[in-house]
Image: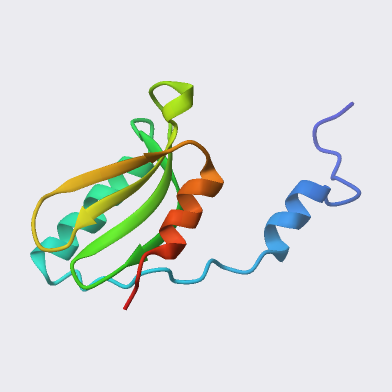
Length: 114
């Protein structure tokens, strides 16, 4: 079959991508502040590219930290989900492990936000 023949219909997969609404803003950061700029850079490096080590499932923030529910891409299968705390005032990251994605998302939802 020649490769120059145009497609007669749009695939379901492609159509679904265009019908989704853009994601809602989960947390706003002031990148002129060094701590918030560092947190944004760390989150971007941790979750994108070939060297990513987690996939975000949800995000919240308060005055001093970002809270991110994540699925780890490395490590033991039983320890794949966490809520990661990224400080907005200093270079610090910590996390608490959860057994399932739903448990991590529930813990994230229970955190207070601004």
